[in-house]
Length: 101
Image 1 (cartoon, one colour):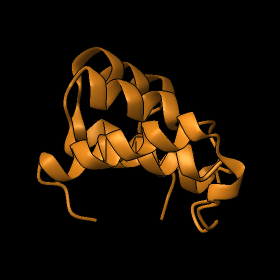
Image 2: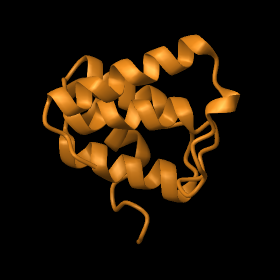
Image 3: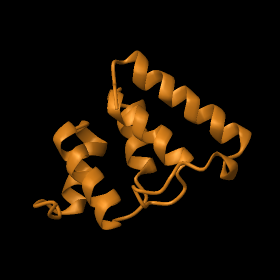
Image 4: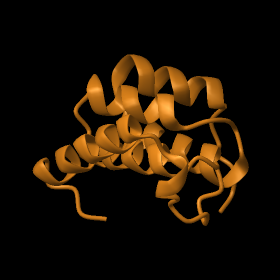
């Protein structure tokens, strides 16, 4: 995949201020495939503020996969009990809202 056509700052603005799903998907690619930073904060805003089902799942993944490498396996041993609880809350919300990975 190619890097996004729009600048990262524009995509972040669209996601954080407007809940733009297309921008979120582009930003996810930029963050996870091209190492543009930690995607957790973006996913959390999109879930909590805009109630986007996929973002709830993305928060779950970001909590349980401490590395930004999208091919890394989930490592439960590296998570605290609180992180695990939080991850499960977000996973449940994703499925309650109809997201299927």
